Amino acid sequence: MIYALFVVYENKLKGNSLFSFDNSKVTFVIFDNSTTKDCQKFNKEFCQNKHIVYISFGCNKGLSFAYNYVIQNYLTETDYILFLDDDTNISQEYLSLISHRIQASSSLVFSPININIKTRQIDSPKKMFFHFLLKSTMVEPKDKEVGLFNSINNGTLVAKKAFDITGLFDPDIFVYFVDSYLYFNLFLHNIKT
View (cartoon, one colour):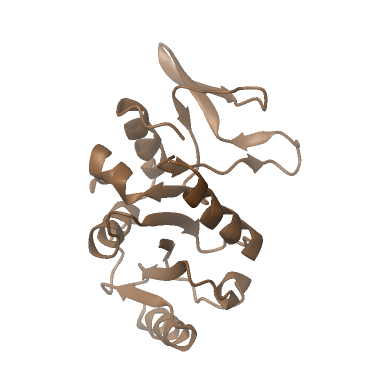
């Protein structure tokens, strides 16, 4: 099973076409970090009408807490979590593709390739290297294997088994660097993507 997790903050869910997809292998989860009762009420009703799992603590717990909560309370050993931004517009084709990929591969992590529309270059992932400071450079399509790299979480699919190896997200990381933390931990534990 794939749990597609959207973490929202002060955003009323509505026009995302993704929620209209019917896929028995994907369970949609909304973790609502909104603090306003109006947003929470709207989102809870939206999720109930669409049969989407809705989670809220009534306050902003941050990304790491939200990710860890879903990993710990919903995923079993054979499940995957798909990290999505609340404004993500992915297609049914993408969901079908990742559903097939996890059956055909032993990989624990699948990272999407994001292309910058203006420059037509790969925006994410980026190769990382140390040169007094941590720097990045583009991943080239010809690169067969890249050691340390960083990617955005949006669209990344991770097996529960990977978190059993690396541990969960650092709860002290509230918003920024959550994705960097994930990829650095994967690198430290030699988990290929």
